Image (cartoon, rainbow, N blue to C red; front, side, top):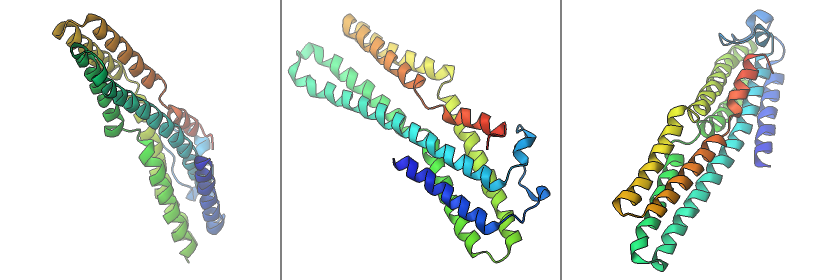
Length: 234
């Protein structure tokens, strides 16, 4: 619901800006397009292109926020549960539960240290649009206002491309490898260091499975949106 309101607000801001700017810009005055874009994209009104990017980044933000807080919250709860169980298990088994808590802590830290880029970019773009709308409403020179939309559109296009790269990076082979190595290390720590072979296998397999699930369920909306945008989707 909140995301829908945000998207609606973004479109209203841009529609208002478009009404203020009017249709004075001719075809040759339109904003440039990315190198890989279809020529059809250049024939579209810049404000329309900007509204499309803003709306789609807001939807990507909602997906990324659900993914981040859903997995992050679940992993944090699992870590707290592991620590809460420590007083109730045999002393020789406590290291197994402490290891699980450490694994959960590392998982939560990953979300804190490297959250999806769209969680920053979508709100930042909305703020830029709001400032642009305010400036356009106050502008007395329509030609100057028309020119100002191009840097804003270029910024929006850069954010969309950056968010798509970030989503691709989250699924690279080295992310999978890091997940498998980390959890294998935990398993070896318990199996070789404490001779808890069963607990080592459980921790390694469960941790790796959760890590792969996190990777495969990440949002890839920005990747699809970038392809659609460059193809002239707006």
